[in-house]
Length: 183
Image (cartoon, rainbow, N blue to C red; front, side):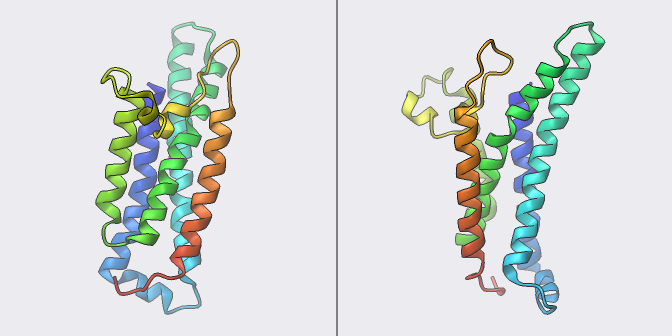
Protein backbone atom coordinates (compact mmCIF):
# COMPACT_ATOMS: atom_id res chain seq x y z
CA UNK A 1 0.00 0.00 0.00
CA UNK A 2 2.77 2.44 0.87
CA UNK A 3 4.51 1.77 -2.44
CA UNK A 4 1.34 2.92 -4.16
CA UNK A 5 1.32 5.96 -1.88
CA UNK A 6 4.84 6.75 -3.04
CA UNK A 7 3.73 6.61 -6.68
CA UNK A 8 0.77 8.86 -5.87
CA UNK A 9 3.13 11.26 -4.10
CA UNK A 10 5.35 11.47 -7.17
CA UNK A 11 2.24 12.00 -9.31
CA UNK A 12 1.14 14.88 -7.06
CA UNK A 13 4.54 16.52 -7.44
CA UNK A 14 4.54 16.07 -11.20
CA UNK A 15 1.04 17.52 -11.27
CA UNK A 16 2.28 20.68 -9.56
CA UNK A 17 5.13 21.02 -12.05
CA UNK A 18 2.73 20.40 -14.92
CA UNK A 19 0.59 23.26 -13.65
CA UNK A 20 3.63 25.55 -13.80
CA UNK A 21 4.29 24.50 -17.38
CA UNK A 22 0.63 25.11 -18.26
CA UNK A 23 0.86 28.60 -16.78
CA UNK A 24 3.91 29.30 -18.94
CA UNK A 25 2.25 28.02 -22.11
CA UNK A 26 -0.93 29.99 -21.45
CA UNK A 27 1.00 33.21 -20.82
CA UNK A 28 -0.06 33.54 -17.18
CA UNK A 29 3.57 33.42 -16.02
CA UNK A 30 4.41 36.52 -18.01
CA UNK A 31 2.19 38.60 -15.73
CA UNK A 32 4.06 37.37 -12.69
CA UNK A 33 7.47 37.74 -14.32
CA UNK A 34 6.66 41.36 -15.23
CA UNK A 35 6.90 42.06 -11.49
CA UNK A 36 10.24 41.84 -9.69
CA UNK A 37 10.10 38.03 -9.56
CA UNK A 38 12.86 36.04 -11.20
CA UNK A 39 12.25 32.96 -13.28
CA UNK A 40 14.44 30.97 -10.87
CA UNK A 41 12.33 32.05 -7.91
CA UNK A 42 9.11 31.17 -9.70
CA UNK A 43 10.48 27.81 -10.82
CA UNK A 44 11.86 27.16 -7.33
CA UNK A 45 8.48 27.83 -5.76
CA UNK A 46 6.77 25.37 -8.10
CA UNK A 47 9.53 22.82 -7.44
CA UNK A 48 9.13 23.29 -3.69
CA UNK A 49 5.37 22.87 -4.02
CA UNK A 50 5.89 19.64 -5.96
CA UNK A 51 8.36 18.28 -3.41
CA UNK A 52 6.12 19.16 -0.46
CA UNK A 53 3.08 17.65 -2.20
CA UNK A 54 4.97 14.40 -2.80
CA UNK A 55 6.14 14.23 0.81
CA UNK A 56 2.69 15.00 2.21
CA UNK A 57 1.01 12.32 0.13
CA UNK A 58 3.58 9.78 1.37
CA UNK A 59 3.03 10.82 4.99
CA UNK A 60 -0.75 10.70 4.60
CA UNK A 61 -0.49 7.20 3.09
CA UNK A 62 1.57 6.15 6.10
CA UNK A 63 -0.92 7.74 8.50
CA UNK A 64 -3.86 6.03 6.81
CA UNK A 65 -2.07 2.68 6.98
CA UNK A 66 -1.20 3.29 10.63
CA UNK A 67 -4.80 4.20 11.43
CA UNK A 68 -5.97 0.97 9.80
CA UNK A 69 -3.55 -1.06 11.91
CA UNK A 70 -4.60 0.82 15.05
CA UNK A 71 -8.28 0.23 14.31
CA UNK A 72 -7.59 -3.47 13.93
CA UNK A 73 -5.74 -3.62 17.23
CA UNK A 74 -2.35 -4.16 15.62
CA UNK A 75 0.68 -2.63 17.40
CA UNK A 76 2.27 -1.38 14.17
CA UNK A 77 1.22 2.27 14.27
CA UNK A 78 4.63 3.98 14.47
CA UNK A 79 6.40 1.50 12.22
CA UNK A 80 3.77 2.17 9.54
CA UNK A 81 4.25 5.93 9.91
CA UNK A 82 7.99 5.31 9.51
CA UNK A 83 7.35 3.17 6.44
CA UNK A 84 5.34 6.01 4.89
CA UNK A 85 8.16 8.44 5.60
CA UNK A 86 10.64 6.00 4.06
CA UNK A 87 8.84 6.41 0.72
CA UNK A 88 9.51 10.16 0.55
CA UNK A 89 13.01 10.01 -1.00
CA UNK A 90 11.78 7.98 -3.98
CA UNK A 91 8.81 10.28 -4.59
CA UNK A 92 10.83 13.47 -4.43
CA UNK A 93 13.56 12.00 -6.65
CA UNK A 94 11.01 11.47 -9.42
CA UNK A 95 9.72 15.02 -8.91
CA UNK A 96 13.28 16.39 -9.16
CA UNK A 97 13.86 14.55 -12.44
CA UNK A 98 10.56 15.97 -13.73
CA UNK A 99 11.74 19.45 -12.74
CA UNK A 100 14.99 18.90 -14.62
CA UNK A 101 13.00 17.88 -17.69
CA UNK A 102 10.87 21.01 -17.29
CA UNK A 103 13.97 23.16 -17.25
CA UNK A 104 15.67 21.44 -20.19
CA UNK A 105 12.73 20.53 -22.44
CA UNK A 106 9.83 22.73 -21.35
CA UNK A 107 7.52 21.91 -24.26
CA UNK A 108 7.92 18.16 -23.89
CA UNK A 109 8.18 18.09 -20.11
CA UNK A 110 4.55 17.12 -19.52
CA UNK A 111 4.47 13.82 -21.31
CA UNK A 112 8.14 13.09 -20.53
CA UNK A 113 7.55 13.54 -16.80
CA UNK A 114 4.63 11.13 -16.80
CA UNK A 115 6.65 8.67 -18.90
CA UNK A 116 9.47 8.82 -16.35
CA UNK A 117 6.98 8.09 -13.56
CA UNK A 118 5.43 5.14 -15.40
CA UNK A 119 8.87 3.75 -16.26
CA UNK A 120 10.02 4.09 -12.65
CA UNK A 121 6.89 2.30 -11.44
CA UNK A 122 7.23 -0.54 -13.93
CA UNK A 123 10.92 -1.02 -13.17
CA UNK A 124 10.73 -0.53 -9.39
CA UNK A 125 7.38 -2.01 -8.43
CA UNK A 126 6.87 -4.68 -11.08
CA UNK A 127 10.41 -5.36 -12.27
CA UNK A 128 10.74 -8.62 -10.35
CA UNK A 129 7.40 -9.96 -11.53
CA UNK A 130 8.16 -9.00 -15.13
CA UNK A 131 11.65 -10.57 -14.84
CA UNK A 132 13.39 -7.33 -15.79
CA UNK A 133 17.15 -7.58 -15.20
CA UNK A 134 18.41 -6.34 -11.84
CA UNK A 135 20.55 -3.56 -13.37
CA UNK A 136 17.47 -2.09 -15.06
CA UNK A 137 15.39 -2.31 -11.87
CA UNK A 138 18.07 -0.35 -10.02
CA UNK A 139 17.37 2.66 -12.26
CA UNK A 140 14.05 3.21 -10.51
CA UNK A 141 14.09 5.22 -7.29
CA UNK A 142 11.24 3.04 -6.03
CA UNK A 143 13.62 0.08 -5.82
CA UNK A 144 15.84 1.92 -3.31
CA UNK A 145 13.31 2.58 -0.56
CA UNK A 146 14.23 1.05 2.80
CA UNK A 147 12.35 -2.05 3.89
CA UNK A 148 10.51 -0.67 6.91
CA UNK A 149 9.55 -2.28 9.27
CA UNK A 150 12.42 -4.71 9.46
CA UNK A 151 14.82 -5.83 12.16
CA UNK A 152 17.66 -3.94 10.48
CA UNK A 153 16.73 -1.14 8.10
CA UNK A 154 19.31 -0.06 5.51
CA UNK A 155 18.77 3.66 4.96
CA UNK A 156 21.72 4.10 2.57
CA UNK A 157 19.52 3.97 -0.55
CA UNK A 158 17.25 6.65 0.89
CA UNK A 159 20.19 8.92 1.69
CA UNK A 160 21.54 8.49 -1.85
CA UNK A 161 18.13 9.39 -3.23
CA UNK A 162 18.06 12.52 -1.07
CA UNK A 163 21.52 13.51 -2.35
CA UNK A 164 20.51 12.89 -5.96
CA UNK A 165 17.27 14.85 -5.46
CA UNK A 166 19.16 17.85 -4.09
CA UNK A 167 21.72 17.75 -6.90
CA UNK A 168 19.15 17.33 -9.67
CA UNK A 169 16.93 20.03 -8.15
CA UNK A 170 19.85 22.47 -8.03
CA UNK A 171 20.74 21.75 -11.65
CA UNK A 172 17.10 22.29 -12.62
CA UNK A 173 17.10 25.67 -10.86
CA UNK A 174 20.30 26.72 -12.63
CA UNK A 175 18.89 25.66 -15.99
CA UNK A 176 15.57 27.40 -15.28
CA UNK A 177 17.41 30.72 -15.47
CA UNK A 178 18.05 30.06 -19.17
CA UNK A 179 14.41 29.46 -20.05
CA UNK A 180 12.65 31.85 -22.34
CA UNK A 181 9.22 33.00 -21.18
CA UNK A 182 7.71 32.49 -24.64
CA UNK A 183 7.59 28.73 -24.85
